Length: 113
Length: 112
Image (tube, rainbow over all chains, first blue to last red; front, side):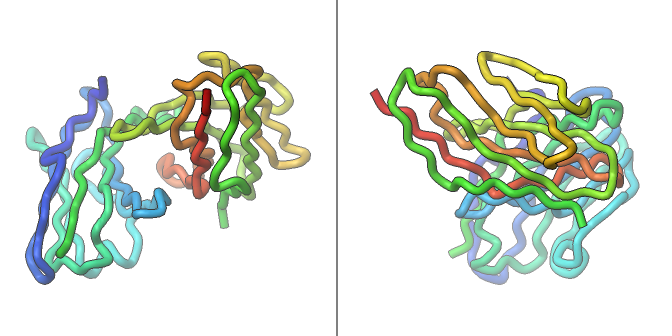
């Protein structure tokens, strides 16, 4: 079973609504990633953190998405104003940085009506 | 920039036949290559990884050899099982903070 815990597993939002997903990374892993897996099963990197700081993010994330990984709290990814094209599976992953290997959660499936 | 190419989107096989899923990559850096497998409604999980040129790596009956000369990391298995039906992703570890760049994935369906 995955040790990266994501909640909720499913969420349904209307266009323009906020959508927030949470992730508890594997214990001891300082780096957290968010990926979007679209309906064609393609992965898109969104953002990653080391401890509480953003390491890298794509343009889309900067504009309509907000993400954080506060100390002693779950990481979160929030879409400020959902669009139909945001419907996807959002995968959180964590890494110990030494091996390059990512450990994924089961994802939060967002449906924007 | 870094990229990974998987040429087969869908592969359908009969149980017992060999599996070969292609993966080629492009990078300016020395890095890790990975194969991840994602079963339906499950988290993607690491299947294989390698950074060593021309060394075969094996796990759960699957194997792959990183060939830097041809920028390839093809996934193989001698005999497909029904339980191998899943999505398979080849991925490349980039130079920045271990971001993985994924290929477009191959959906493998194994039929009786």
